[in-house]
Length: 294
Image 1 (cartoon, helix red, strand yellow):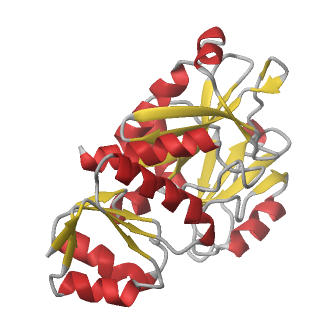
Image 2 (tube, rainbow, N blue to C red):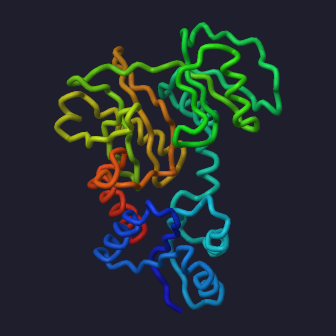
Image 3 (cartoon, rainbow, N blue to C red):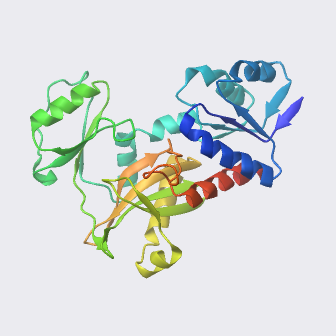
């Protein structure tokens, strides 16, 4: 039997660069990597279940593809290390759940009204939209990439139309958060968490463009709370690898805007204008390998 330190499953063409970074990190750390893609999926499943191959940890970038379920089942049945186990991912991706968890933990989040799914409650209950201001944001409780999000809603009709798009999901009605300006740019950040490490970035919520937050900027602008807040979110969701979105308001309040995103978009900035800075993605690949290899 050949036992590998890490099994990486992936199929998304934009994960090619990330897979290459994982490959390089495994080589540098002397860790054997077992890559499973659609091209070798059948033979890999057979090799695992017949005892020809084995692995100690699973990094599953194909979690939404049922074809890879036998790999995940193998990891569960053999009690192997799973980065971002599916049961934790499914729990933490629910924004309604995470909103309540964050508030209970004393973190700041936008003022929010949580609605039951349309299929359970088709008629809206009486809603006090006053505290939300004239315009507000609508979000389905589950999902990412902005799918189903309405950024400039203002009426009950807007709410109902949004709920019809994902009728089986809870919906969040949230106030708009205005970030203050720091050196002429909005104080809006996306912080990546991986294996206990926090990697904060400036992030533009309109263009989705990143810039690395330097240690000098972090100190100069008193942005250390970004790491503390992200660490507290990590303790709540118990995931190994995720990102969170945090804005700093004029009142110097750090508000968690997008709670837990474990479906990290691994596109590199050198390849896409809204990709993650290359050095940040390389650090995350290194940390993921170190985490399972140590």
